[in-house]
Image 1 (cartoon, rainbow, N blue to C red):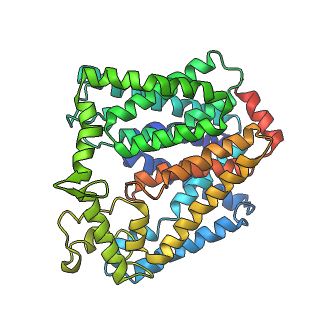
Image 2: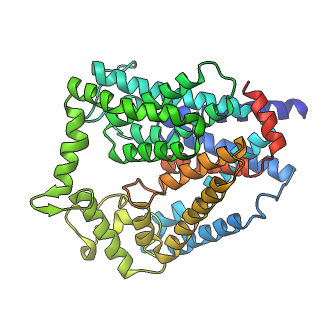
Image 3: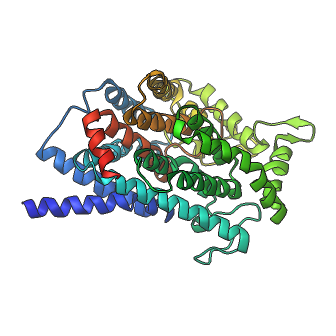
Length: 418
């Protein structure tokens, strides 16, 4: 039995260690990893149940949210499509719990998870810069868009969002690594390389997320302030060099953005295409304001005559909150806004603490990550996309882990980073 437990634990270590690298390969491998992690967690929980996590009010609130998703799907005109997502959406909270439970019993493994994740994100960023400079990356991938560089992601232009949303993993590694050699240089290099890659990716939402994250880091990460200040001074110089080498970088971020917002003496919300999606979502909401049209229904409902709008149809409306209004109605938005406000209040309460120990700082980073990722006034992906959901739930998994931590354990954790 001990041999079996050892093998399962090592298998879990491998799964968690390759989780972030697997996200670069596409949706299949992360789904397989998530499935195995959830399965192992359920087996271990069945053998040795621990209900302390589920006694918290936020989990009760989350389960009510899951019930709302299912009810919305049952009353949808697209029941089969909608239920296929809502019935199994619980797997993402299991995924988060699986990571948290594993780390709780293998505290020192957090170091390797954060280190590998940070290195992978940095390597991806370097590869984007190489692709930009030489028109080909280390694996022979060439740009598929003249304005945007995506490295390993190929034609799926989401490398910038991937970096901007997950770079907090490297930040956490630096926070715990108090005795790291050349720490300041490493932090500066990490921010600089990732920032350049996000800019070159041409993803304007990712650039907004990156800038907002770094600005908030400046407010409470005192050890990082000087580095971030130098970074902001260097940024215009670097941007000038990039634009000099390839003027198309400026064209994407400035000229194209300007032409999309201000077009033919009209002003659009981000662009005419985005605004059309938003109008369609709002019209759907007006027809079914309480429970919505069902999870993942936007892609089908937008084809109906009553919602047809030029440029208005897509797989999702490109904004989490409008997607909830259209697909789950006011009930769905109530849960989303409640979760969002919960993390804002948690961030404020931790920020006010006079004694900002490493545990509180780690929580601030994670609360901030969720707050920025769910920021209401920016374009976003499909909330119920499997690949995107795994990205969104990784910081939530670490929050569960640290919320059940104490200062004594934190001291042991810091020792592991030496």
